Length: 472
Image 1 (cartoon, rainbow, N blue to C red):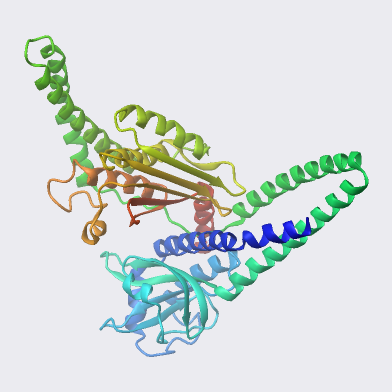
Image 2 (tube, rainbow, N blue to C red):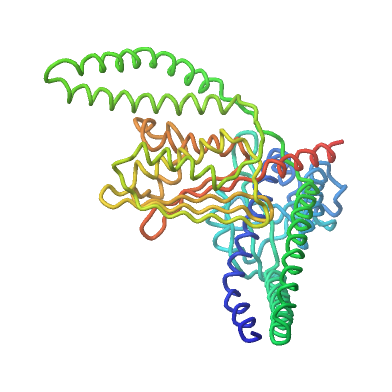
């Protein structure tokens, strides 16, 4: 039994590292993304323009703009109990060097050059992302960064959050030691009582089950308490594009009238001789137009709709939507793989209708654009201990070029593609933005994957309360 305990613990070691990394990147990515929306790009740009020399800012109170950004970073680092400072980076005019800007530390490090920045940071400076296990002059790190934009939409800096890799590995190893110790204790007790008293071990097993139930209940209470203690800044973005909103409204109502008449005439035309094929084509194109208009109306509604928050059982919602999509594409017969995992949290708080629209549009695109002969669809979802929903859906159909991926979520970037896959992706991006999430497209070996990260609503709520506290 002791040997079995060691085998199980070490067998899961690599898996534990991967899970811990995913949790760390989810947390760091969420922190950097939310903070990039809180920091004024205009203030940061003014700061770097006025102070052009290294260490020209010596204290956090020396400059108003510096102190304002510092307070946002410091409050977040303190509330999340981060062991490393959060900081901003900006490029030199020739874009050959990176300089440190504002930091959450009480000791400014202004305009010090970043001696050995990771390649991913340089290449994805304007897009944001994360960096896995890299060395620089200060140590080994796991990092995530997000761009900061000024009022003109120009990227002036990035905000970066780090976790020391040695501390990360130490926590993983400590967890391994705890698991081994715990397993040794349990196996020893079970083995001892199994050898001596079979009846007694049954009583101990019952007591152990009760203690596990109490442990799980206490764990749920602690997770809920820690989630509510997160004091995070995030102002609600409600910049409504009036011109686009007007376009959605007028187009949907102007086209739906004749569209309904086409559908009505199609039903009558079926009764005529030798017109069945024509009628079916009319119905098919009419249905495509109707789907397009529904998506356009959905996007318009998302811009004005107030969130309606309630608990959502994500796995159940995916199965419900998948059932309806399967009925729509009855002839497709896709090979579908579903993997659902939750860590500590059984429920996720969000707007059910918006979450449904995200899942529905991703699955609809996956079915519609999968390989015609042998479609394959993979669905992976989990909610980590920080309350962040990760959803990825991949299919083996259409592949994107790098240029197409860059503008995949822009509705009218290429003329004539708004009624195809681009409209679906634009709808997904609008819905994800409404929930303060992140969406991306990645190429796998034989498939295309859409990945979505959405934080639990109450994390965002705590960020807003934290922001109000700082400004007060």
